[in-house]
Image 1 (cartoon, protein in one colour):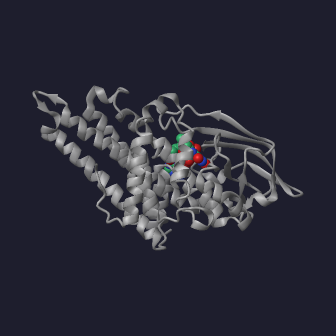
Image 2: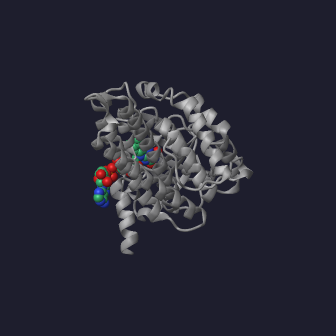
Length: 386
Ligand SMILES: Cc1cc2nc3c(=O)[nH]c(=O)nc-3n(C[C@H](O)[C@H](O)[C@H](O)COP(=O)(O)OP(=O)(O)OC[C@H]3O[C@@H](n4cnc5c(N)ncnc54)[C@H](O)[C@@H]3O)c2cc1C
């Protein structure tokens, strides 16, 4: 096990071991089969809920564990090392819909949704992207028009993780008018439930990796949403979403660290056992150097993540650092999984070993919750102080 050097409190270590035990017993043995079937076992959501892993960052008064960011990220790393698809379910649920309702919702919304989200009775999703609004998320076109006590929503959301299994979907749509567009300041956030008339799950994406995590389109056809489902103030939805994505990016960085660690551990074990030219592979210095570089990059990505999490918990503004964490961890995961396949040779290219799945799973961490280019834009703006 490639352990962190970060000093952990007793509670942080306990959470890490709890997650490791669960991941080893309940996820790792099934991850390859779920990947092949493009489907996880729905019972996993209930089990994550029983452990408290779906309310890790929520306060105790709504049934959460009220943990610090580092505890949450340690747990995510363990889950991702076993199954990256389960990790994204956990990351999206904890970082985005629950946090948006907690931080920006009103008491009635918090009381109605958060206790059940903390236990996994209700699963959350986050629907910001659209077919023509990705990196430029402010270009969303889904429109809400006020009609009495309701808003009527029309449009399509794209790439929604858990969109077909979620019970609570936080979405960002336009509430400005076609005659008076306000850009990112014309977007509002709503809490949707699949029982709303006009809500429809569309195409399920057939993905390269993360195949056990469902990604779907959602169509809103004159969907009538009660006005009390708006989160916070009208026209603040984009600001709320961007603030929530800061925590989301730390979660995706932890997912990437978990994937990278699993690939490195697999490569260490394989190069110990595999013999060529009459010797184990790891006795060749070229192999040892490659393992050394993989371990060094993993340590750098994880150390940056843990330092940033601790700073966030001290109340510091870590927007640009969260982007750095995601950028470094995702590119590290891609680099380490690529080198792991090389160390396995032909056996790395087939499904008998986990590294080809880890390679496919790693790629998405460079794309969602802001591509690597978008992270560089965020970091560049901060360092250039524009
Ligand atoms: C598996 C999966 C799950 C997802 N889950 C969710 C979810 O739950 N909720 C949600 O809302 N969204 C989700 N997404 C959407 C994801 O966040 C977007 O795919 C991502 O933000 C990129 O948007 P895009 O795909 O439209 O690419 P585009 O924005 O079209 O980008 C294409 C390329 O152009 C580059 N580019 C764009 N603008 C610039 C620029 N200014 N400078 C330099 N390069 C630029 C990008 O970096 C990228 O390389 C998910 C996506 C996937 C694939």
